[in-house]
Each structure stands twice: as C-alpha cells, then as structure tokens.
Length: 175
Picture 1 (cartoon, rainbow, N blue to C red):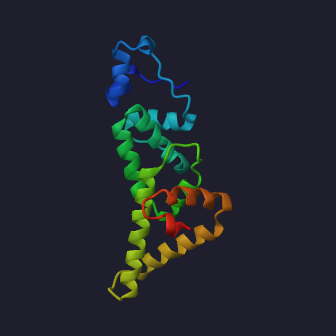
Picture 2: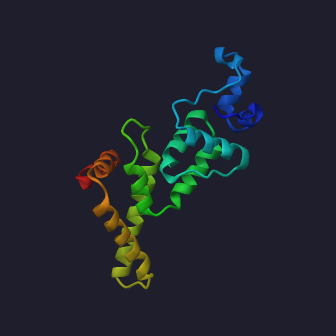
C-alpha cells in the first residue's frame, strides 16, 4: 500500500475527487485500488502528485501514462508525453519493445516514434543533399538505430513489429 493524502489526490484527479465525494458505493472508503499497476508506477505517480517530478525507470514510462489515463491525472499524462518526446529514437524502440501485448495500447507513443523516425530520415536526406545541417547528428541517429536493430532480441523485434504494424500506413513498411 502507498499512502497519499486524499485532498492531494483529489486535486490532481477530477475522477478520484468525484469518487471520494460522490455517492458511489466505493466512495465510503478512503482508498483507491491501483493493484493492476506495478508498485514502481504507483510510487512514481504519487511522487509526481506531491512534487510535480517523477523519477521512474524509462521502461515504466508507458505504464505511467496508462496510470495517468486510467485515473484521469492530466498533468501526469502531459508530463509523460513531454518526457517521451525528448527521448532519442533508440530509447523509444527499447521501451516499446518491452511493452507486453497484455499491456494497454501504446498508440500515443507509436505516433511520436514514427514522427521521430521520419524526422531523422528527413534530416538524413537534407544532409545528403548538402544543406549544411550537422552531419554528426544524422550519423548518430542512423548509427544508433542500426545498432539497436542489430542487437535487439527476436522477441523485442516481434513486439515492435506488432505495435508498429497497427500504426496507419506502416503495416506494409514493417513487413
């Protein structure tokens, strides 16, 4: 069990506030059941609720977003998406390859991954056309992407293939 002040949690989540204040059968208790989430995710969410900061292992990022979505904690959801958007493409691949097929659909993360990959390749085209963009940035992107794909286990690649094939227009490209 993780302890959280009811007022703090209510302030972060309109859904939980309604639950505590409403006439729901479970509003009589002073607890919220988050048993479907890993304890590290719950602790990270509680840390965020109190401090506005969350130090959690990268592999839990999609789970933290699911937690925020499930409990309607909009600020946490936005923070997770912002954190995701600044990660290198290889980190996106590492995280998504670890998302189990039983976990919630990581669609928002897939869209950002696809945008980041497309942007990386667009920069590569610009460099190859001699526009003066820094070559080492593009080289690092391509090298990191190559190294990850070469070193990833077949299970990780299968999970990535599954997730990416669900993204519009990528089904044929993934195959």
